[in-house]
Image 1 (cartoon, rainbow, N blue to C red):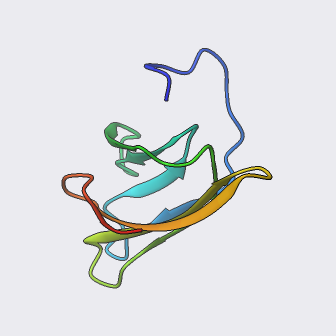
Image 2 (cartoon, rainbow, N blue to C red):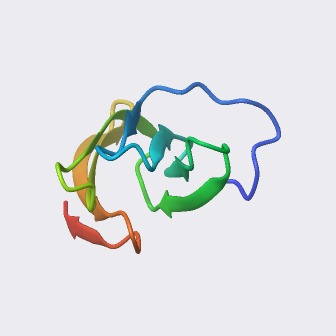
Length: 90
């Protein structure tokens, strides 16, 4: 993913953590986690396929399911720990 986005990229997926404390937004090869109150970037979950098509937090908000892929090449669903970005299952 880029260090910063010089121009806007399409948002193809987003989801709020069940307690409302985080907003997960699709980026390019990453998921951006924002504080929905002040809009501050909290963290970036990287090492994700090119295009993200779906995001879903677990009921307790500790895991994030990311459905992503590279057009005409691959598709994947990963479960990632929100606190440290570790992939739990692919």
